Image 1 (cartoon, rainbow, N blue to C red):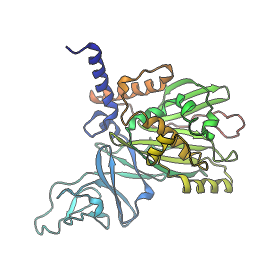
Image 2: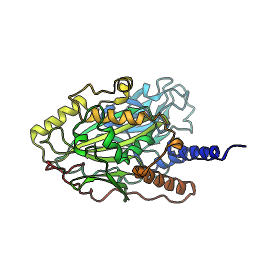
Image 3: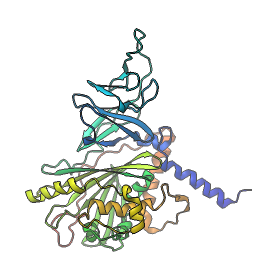
Image 4: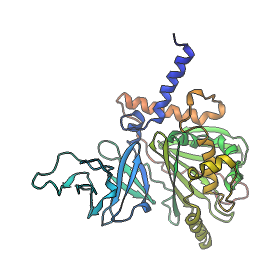
Length: 398
């Protein structure tokens, strides 16, 4: 007979699998596909070129037609299953390298040059609508008509005078650990004091915050109060986007809005897409500093430095205390959990209120989905939360 504690542990194992499995036939995979998701940097594919993608366990081909228009179709030819991105772009269509089968942007086969007079096959490859926004390529991979492109929009980025930069990181762990980190305000007091303390860690400080969480029209608003003059407010958007505000590159620079999406490639790998927005009002010198910084440091990826980070636990790039340092600090803690963390063995405390709140929200939405009932109709916030002023700074802080 199996001991009762082992039975309960196995029940927890199966429950938590719902949070990590993202295949098309899994509940979480179906839930994620109900939303527009970023799949690539817009700059990563030029007109007349194609790149391969792996998104939520599905192989895809992203290509730009000769007009520059983007198309997202299946990753493999329907004929002999070779990779499509290795072929050619012909107008707004893509031709397979193997036998020349040609597909349009809707996934339909429109030419089979070696099958003269036999017509076109009924089968076709998948195809999904795409949308460029602030340097990212978003796709809708769900069923039925795509929803309005509303939830991914960020009003802070659309303000006149905002300067935009993008980033992408490919982490070798499950996506949900990174989502949970977004709702863990306490980790900032420890993780971002590691390696070296950058402007972000210095602004937030190592004080332990009082926590509160509120469900909004778009997701969860997290408030971490460390003192009357040090209150960090962040808006997390369902199902996988976080927004924080961080100090500028120098004390004279405007603060920077950071939006991060965590997209599962499969169960063991995640791509993080970032949009950085320097708030309006910056001087020309400040705008140049922002542009030059992201040109030099904006593509740092901590997973490429895994062995070095875990072996030395030191930060060897003193000139980069923003993107690289923050990513390295988070990577050490999140990747240190293992590629898929064993949540069934955790011991949670009161400081994990954000984690508990997040999981309850996801389990609620997954239960509704499995029951065939409508899930919540999430929509973007009408306006951003007012952020308090940090001591010694004139710009709103994080």
